[in-house]
Length: 237
Image 1 (cartoon, rainbow, N blue to C red):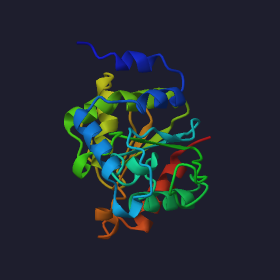
Image 2: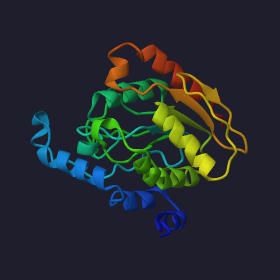
Image 3: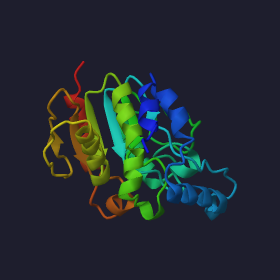
Image 4: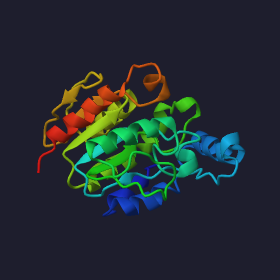
């Protein structure tokens, strides 16, 4: 059976319209069950919250020149707040760096209505629902791919992309390869930079700002700052 979603998304003219469809998505039964169960049971520290418990829409400046692609929302972060990298330690690390680099108007994000605005940047993810153990399956990533493809089409001013982690990195490359672009196998590494051919946006790789990386020193604030400095230098007026 043909998948109707790509054709539906192809008819849209804005990321806002896409997000209205995305937040109702139920394509992955395992992820639907996990995100909704997490929203029901909650974490003790957030028992007074009404969890979002749905797919997480993209967020940021629709005129952005830079696209940031993460892995997936955290069970008690984005799945709780309804906005990627919001209300968890990864978000604290990310938004502080984006603020220092001039891509965000404030260094923290705790809920959807906290006043955070991104400037010249837009945040997406390889997987839009919180996955168990932060590990989406290949099929689940495939199911989410049309949303990332649509964002790449609708963000008309894109010049570059920053992939946070190897899964985000491969998600971007898979989207382009699925469109028929002949992109060779590229190696992921912190600070790895690639000029993609055929007028595609350039791609810059970074370690993901997860606790596993930031608390062990694998990713330091200084290392992260070099990513956003390089992104700023590559963006042209």
